[in-house]
Image (cartoon, rainbow over the protein chains, first blue to last red):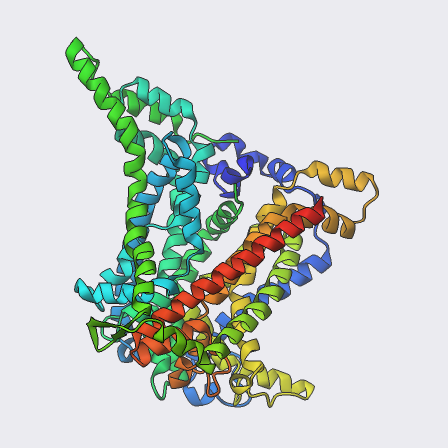
Length: 306
Length: 332
């Protein structure tokens, strides 16, 4: 079990209890099991190479988005940004209706994130701290749903959506993703250790009903994990491609769908496609720059299976 | 240890909110029944949304797929269906393009998963050292995770271009550089694998890192007292401790490679994308399904493809289970 690592991996322990703030080093010594060794030059050189490899394609997106198409496909290819970034961004914005696509994506990702947080926290709390018949079996069932790829159900899903009048509408991509197994599992793991039974008991003694307990005890404790889950969910919803590409059309796309259709057109202007790619990625990169630490912590915390 | 942020506040608000002390006898009996009902029903109410959504948009369509697979349903008339029995299955099973797609999915799955997980393992090992700016490195290798399939595929499409592509230009310095990546039987598969590897290596490295950090220090101390070198420690302590995590990532990556869609669709773009290249050289099962259902408009065969994918997944799960058992046995 991962008992100690969850709260600390989230990068939350220091902020939630200031007394722990100074012991970061000590904690890492205890947890950073195995290797107390410092990384040598080889380590840093390898990390720099991998790090460059990670960001170079994004850098080249910027380069390609700031030249005209001819220059992008020239030999040798451009290696530094040119001066046409703004006009390419404008062209992408107008030609591919990216403005509408961005708004659509924000609506979709926003709805999915809010709903996921609400439902997953409730379910995670129930699985972590409440006793009820079938709990173990139902939790296994939740995890098992993770192994089902969306491909298996898109055909009838498409038919259902057009039957109930959601064909081509945002509802068709929002509703199937309102609550996910990963989120339930993630909140459960966090609440298992972050929420002491004594708190719940105390609230019960004070006469709080179950919903009251959720509102005034569970939610405040869960808030840090909800932040992280919210960001992970938002990134995933923003980037989702397969089902939105099948469900939505050119008139009412998300940003990923619009990008896919831009490249599928007969003679796509590569520098404008790259400008579109840049527009679609920038918001998330911004989130990563600001909340990188929390996202890293969240992935690591969610990764270790109980 | 488990932290209790704002615990005083929680107590305060809980106390303040309970403005009722039971008074009358009859009322309190009724109340206690209500309490018991609240205690019994609440957990089910809390987990209900997940199961309702999954039932409506996951399980029900999954079973419905089986029904459609036995009918003729066309994109042009979604409300009409006609029983055709096993015709859809025999149609796709006799289609050589289907078997090409199965083969491609399998090959791309292997050449994208194996290097990815090996590199991720090594990377996690490096990140597990005491580093300056450790959060910076972790975030840096995770940036591809923030990049969507569409963006990644479109950038790499440019990089892998035969004419004026960045990669060919770099390769021409060492005497290569005329590779037609997208049109080659193997080079196109490599190109798609590179996109997959780029997007997921950092993510998997973080998963391994998390697992490495939960390995008890005592194991390493004991090993180093016994005179084990660093490499021996890695092989005899780290890897065995990570075995469940490694198996977990293999399962996740296998399921992921069954889903490859955006990468092949956008590698060359246009109409080539929806048939997986001029010779179907990088057509995956998801592309085949999409092409049958959405481009050609025959939903029956598309549903049959979905169920064959389910069968393949179950087969892979079985193999995984057997390997898992075998590994556990050989570990003892």
